[in-house]
Length: 418
Figure 1 (cartoon, helix red, strand yellow):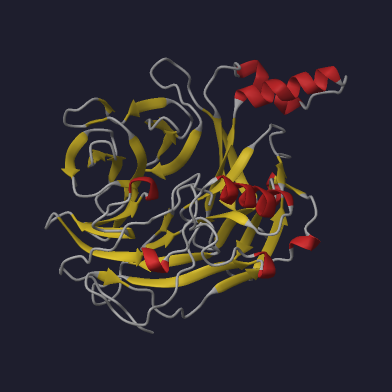
Figure 2 (cartoon, rainbow, N blue to C red):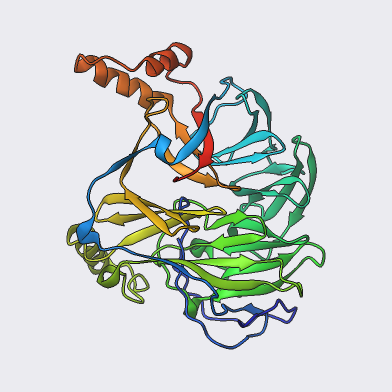
């Protein structure tokens, strides 16, 4: 197996043309293996084990799976609602220091206890220390026991303790990034947002050293990347020392291992979904998006269903959760790495709590979560009343306790297909 390590030599300038992606549940870029090392470039090595799923879209059928069949020992957490802790659409959830950290689409990150009581908010909007303008992502640094916010408007990382106390901030004015993930004790891997890609460093990934305060390596230069459009969620997933990187309009997930014996960083293809002839051709999304081009995308992807688009992924120790679009219909898959079992479906039935549930997403240590929005529960109630059907008792109990304008509820459980 070839390994490529970070260096501190300068970058190579490349003409900028970076149409890339940001989602995330979930994907990634299939990129070629150059077979040689470049200055300050992390290349992709041969894979020792590539998990692969082949899907024939002509055999897909509509199927709803029950929540109890994939999530065990679950708990419904009704989040406290007050003027201090109002959440918008939930973008990400993490469990850290026996607390539930929740980030929404507005860039707010709030902490609740495991019973849903509000604890604190991380930072405030502003331009001072510990303040942000636009938080595009956040992560848990398990080594430093900190929660870190990325403010891409002010080009800085804000570090908070597990109790919400502001610790420090790090400016990185030379980088425009919409996402980041910790890599070892002193490094951060930035994702180079294709909307504002750095012209001097046109790479998908950039490794920044917090101690030397400089960019020390890059990965996935433009000529290797199959560009795409927006990702709806983070291009990263993390579990232990492994970081999983994902982009749109490609069908591979790459594992970035930051704990090799010699201190290097290894990148390997890790998981792939193959749709055969329905895979997007190389370079399909790289041409200029003029009216003719968009008409072709509309026709070939949405109407003819000729190609599969928007493959998204989420990873944990034993499972891969992925989704893909066939025309305008979204399908989901759960893949078990241990027994290579794969389940395909296009909806989830909440047979545990009998509440409309918004998706399933993965957490480290084979945990998973799903979101319940009160407005959807109230809409379901109207449907029951309109059709003169009896509401499930658990739905009635939920409506007795939760108002339509209340914060969402979170279902936490163990991912288990057995």
